[in-house]
Image (cartoon, rainbow, N blue to C red; front, top):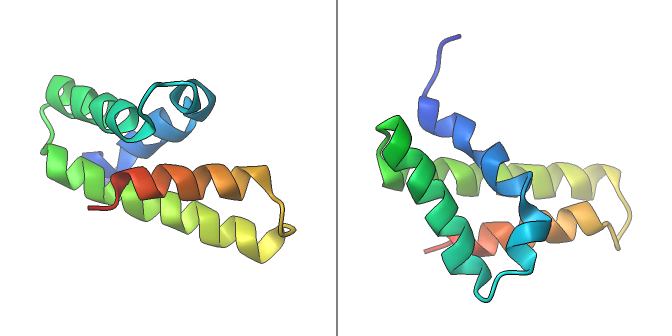
Length: 86
């Protein structure tokens, strides 16, 4: 497999979205999760955050193209993406 490892962290955020939604502070929770993965894997935390943001936005756009207006998956991706926006 070729590519940037930071790209691979995003599923560790969106696959735990329900847990993150119950956190006291969504932004802090998901950023901390990404930062921990970056640290353990020896990745640049800023690149991890940026790739995660890009992938969350891409998921939201894809869901909007194929879902209805009240799609909970899309809403979850948007909330998570906002948490990674600077």
